[in-house]
Length: 200
Image: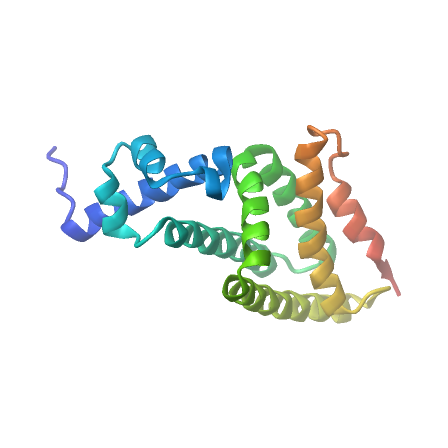
C-alpha cells in the first residue's frame, strides 16, 4: 500500500514538532542561556535555517515550548475535571496523573524550572503565564465548588484557594521529587489534597 504523501503544511508541522522536541531536550540539558540554535538544529537533524524558517529566534522557540507545556498541563486538568463526578475521584485521578508525570517526564520538570526563572525576569511572559493560571484557577474552583455542594463537603479553604493549592503543591512537589531523587513519598500529593476536604 502506498503511503499518502504529506502536504507542504503537514511537512511544516512535522518539522516544527521535531524542532520543539529537540529544543526541550537541549534546553533541559543546557538551560536557556547554554542552549544554541545550532545545537537544537543538530539534535533534530535539521539545518539552522530550518529553525529560523519556523521560529524567529531562540527566545521565540523557548516561548513556544512554554506555551505548549502550559496548554498540556491545563488541558490534562480540565480533562480530569470533566471525567470525575466526585471530589474524591477527582483528587485520586489528580494524584495518579501527578505521580505518573513526575516519574516519566523528567525533561519537562527540569524545563519547568527554566520557564519559571525566565518568566520571573521577563514581565511580558510573566503576565501571559499569570493570565493562563488565573483562567485555570477559575475553572478548577468552579468545578470543586459544585462537587463540594453536591456532596455536602466542607474545607478549610475556599474553592479558589483549593484550586491555587492544587497547582502550587503540584509544582513544588515535582521540584523536590527530582532534587531528592525520588525520596518524596508516593501519593503524598493526593493525601495532602484529601486532608483539606472533610465531610460536613
